[in-house]
Length: 342
Ligand SMILES: Nc1ncnc2c1ncn2[C@@H]1O[C@H](COP(=O)(O)OP(=O)(O)OP(=O)(O)O)[C@@H](O)[C@H]1O
Ligand SMILES: [Mg+2]
Image (cartoon, rainbow, N blue to C red; front, top):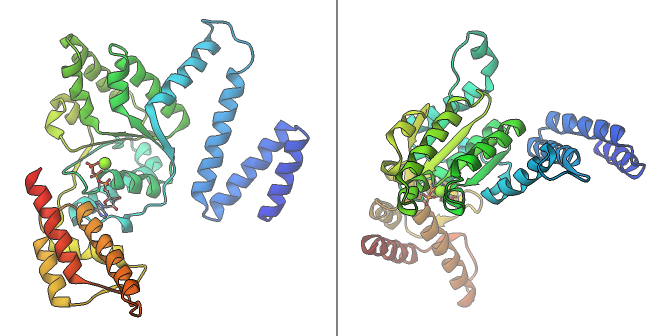
């Protein structure tokens, strides 16, 4: 069958209100998309169907306090805490990092792809990963890479909102969120995991912090092996030790060294085939940008590139794919000054 055949069937059953056949046609399209490597599309369809079935089960008139009513309320509340629900096209090739980090991340993915083999031998499967390190060094990016490589949906959780919204309900909300992600088999990505530490500031009640940490410990301990939790923080020291210990993999993403900066430049300039106007100067700038994050270096490079291109146009010179190292040097110097000030 071609995609057009699927669309025709789906339109037909949809218009005829034939739910059963519609679902069948959709599930065939999902299989077809997976086979033709349109994984993200398949995942999105799958999630749409799950969501719609769930809503249908909860729709209609419901009695306040009944199970259905509670479920519907719960869905609404949980959605407040989800920043995004996404699929990802990022792959390992998008992330520059040390060999160690790469191997750890790759092993994590491999473990999940071969989950059945490990289960046969009753071996535990790593499913909780903590990414830490300075800002702009690829923690969020690494989470997207994991989702892309594992071909899974991911929910990005707004832990700050859970913690600060209704004090005293943090534990309950976290439990709901984990329940939903487990039934839908999505990766839970808790960015800014250190916001847990803020409970200490918000709450006069010191018991609250302990309660929340205990809840997370329990949620982690009872997390089915197929489900994954990724947490990211740039303040690992803010997180309770007991909690840190629960992670199966703790991975630090560090500031780039010289060869990693070169890799980042190659990756960033890959599409346009851009070159520097002076190779020796570019080597010097690479050395002088040590200490900056991947994000800052990439930002200065792209800005330099754009400024160079526009200056050609302004001076009515033919546009060539070169980057002015003079402009780039200025931007890097500025960025380093900002770093010292902050
Ligand atoms: N290791 C890396 N390899 C390639 N690109 C990177 C890397 N780190 C950062 N970048 C670039 O910088 C952007 C921002 O990085 P990212 O959001 O992953 O940083 P972060 O560590 O999560 O920072 P924060 O702690 O501020 O949230 C990325 O989208 C990417 O373009
Ligand atoms: Mg981040």
